[in-house]
Image 1 (cartoon, one colour):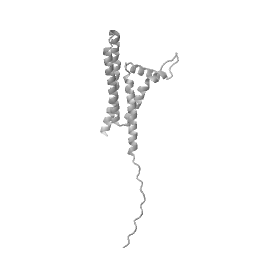
Image 2: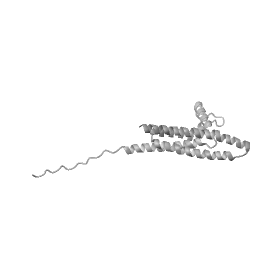
Image 3: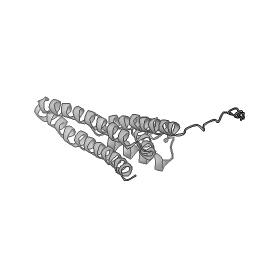
Image 4: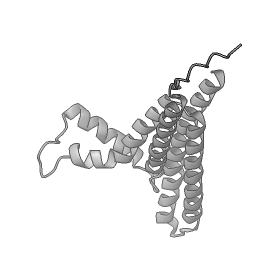
Length: 174
């Protein structure tokens, strides 16, 4: 049980660390390199850093998937699915319910629209959108973990053994 707890905690820490590193690299390092391109007209450093960002995002997606799969915990699967779905569908939620269109108020109530807007503008500041990609990795990994856990539970239930009647032994003659 201790190992299961450690693997589950590790899966959550890996996902959080991957999201933080991806957001930091995307919104700080790459955004600064993009501003430098506007000043120096030399895209070389930005292109190199973009390649590193793509590799980092791929590594983060693999780490999230591996840590989630190793946890084989339903709670981790549910957290991965919820957080991943939120990150993946955040742009759609923002544009569908939290934006004023032609002067009409947002569809969502003001506190919800404001919160969605703040989350979206914070996360989308990156150049490559790696946080959204990692959100997709969390969603797929969480669904795989839930499928694995539910499938294993189905296998653990062994059907009751049916007892077939056997004919009574015939008495032997003396």
